[in-house]
Length: 201
Image 1 (spheres, rainbow, N blue to C red):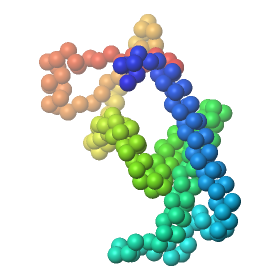
Image 2 (image 1 turned 90 degrees about the vertical axis):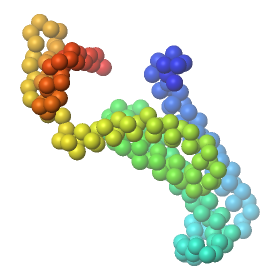
Image 3 (image 1 turned 90 degrees about the horizontal axis):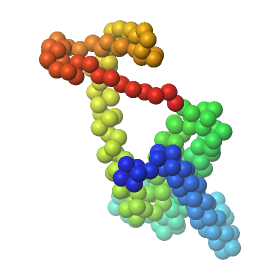
Image 4 (image 1 turned 180 degrees about the vertical axis):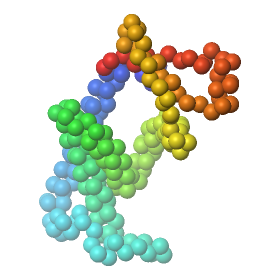
């Protein structure tokens, strides 16, 4: 999409960040309005309307759960989604992300999955909005993940030698181990030597 639209990745990142903030504000507003309705109606205590009772945790495939249980589950899963999104937003703030990037990344993945699962259980039709993005994300990331897992299963990349090249602007020559068949095939091809450029960030 970035290539198609001619966007710089930094511009796309700003859109991603602000889309997250807008989503969070909408979720908070949605929850606040419902909380206001619950408080105004005063039919039950707030906890009774949000936390499912003991009978609601029993699973019976032959009977539909009571309506009160369904309402409690809607509210409970909505609250879970909101809590996951809150942690995701807080750990994504600039001051946290720059100091604890690995934690930010872990929370982003875990809380992102938790928030999407909570949202799907809160209101099932939401999956029709989430599915296209999930399918695209999985389609673009799964090949690389499978390749990485396969490489790890085979023992990973075996670096035999690293040679610092003089007068080459900091370039290094990296020698990788290959099988006998691969080595024989590479000797016949120009792909035996590959130049990788990784500019400093």
